[in-house]
Image (cartoon, rainbow, N blue to C red; front, side, top):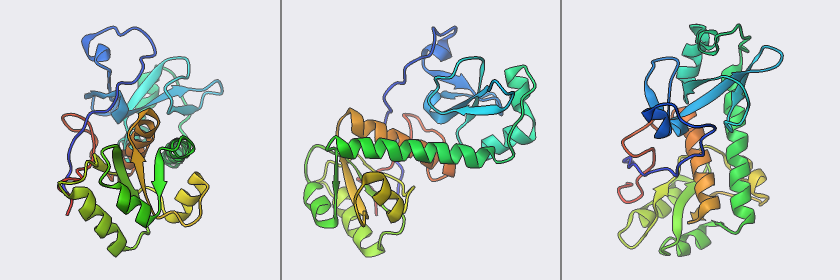
Length: 232
């Protein structure tokens, strides 16, 4: 599958920016000091008990430190004790911090998908998805990680055809049981998201989890995404 980039919607700023990069929504990673878009990083703060707390929603008060949003970068920051340096304070970093962040990102993605489904922005089922792929309001196609290869490939080919307006084929971050539980349906295997704000939020949350797990690149010129038009 070939990757294609697409822009992400801007995120709200917590406070007035003090420099040009912050005005553009960028933050500097404590590991390699590279400035990246906020959606490509994860913010951490020191909790009241002195323990490191992932601030996935970027709402917690206090001084924050930013780490590029992958498991590898997070482990490097922990091993090199960069959190204390960035926070300018002693901080207890849990040994399972990467597992905690993965769970928080997964919970956020599931909640966003659930909200999109309740808003009527998700269509489920092979035949319904197949018949909906030609609509001009289809934003993204997604599959369970344990979906059968033949059904997956058939839908991917339709999504990649010139007659389809699908923007993305999202990475497989959940299996069928996880999707079924999140969406309140049985045997969820294939689905599509229709265009709109609630669907965009779900897509962003899925992308962020995929970046952390290494299923998407950290960043690209316009932001991470997956090409539907050039899928195999």
